[in-house]
Length: 205
Image (cartoon, rainbow, N blue to C red; front, side):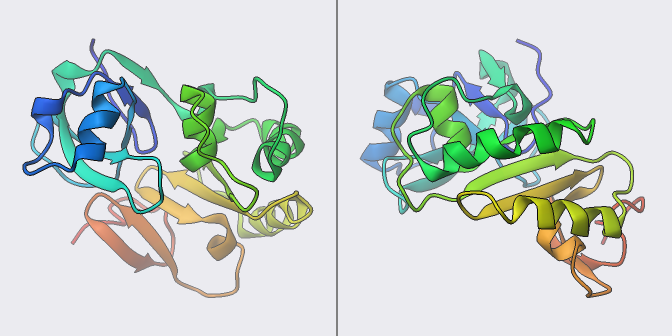
């Protein structure tokens, strides 16, 4: 399929022979079972997308490169919503914040363990799991607005880590809502401190 993957998208179709060598057995088993990989933020050659493979435990993470032509299915965070009883604090938090984020009028969705479980049905969540979210902000998100949003999310049943996805990369809502003049922007070229994550070429060398 023709695809233009973004960070945090889940991709299906990567094969065992595309893993870096030597690949651990758990990574081979994950792909053999048909599990998706997640797009990560890194530079790579044309025709490839940087991805991460996850196993059943937190220490089972592997960086890899997936050929674009191998993508059979793509699922973005904003396509994921709760579809079962919210048994864990992170899922209850997702239900709580859904109307708040929807009210922004901006695309948003869960990532991390919550996104992976919603997409696959695999039981990767536990009682202490955080809720990772992205909010796509093509235009500058006012810092006062960020502070109000952060305060609104503070009452959720678990800790929430929300990333503002700008055209140049991602910045943590918690940082952008803070008082520091410069914030950490994560982009394909690496992480760096910037004054405004929405300014063009914020991640240029």
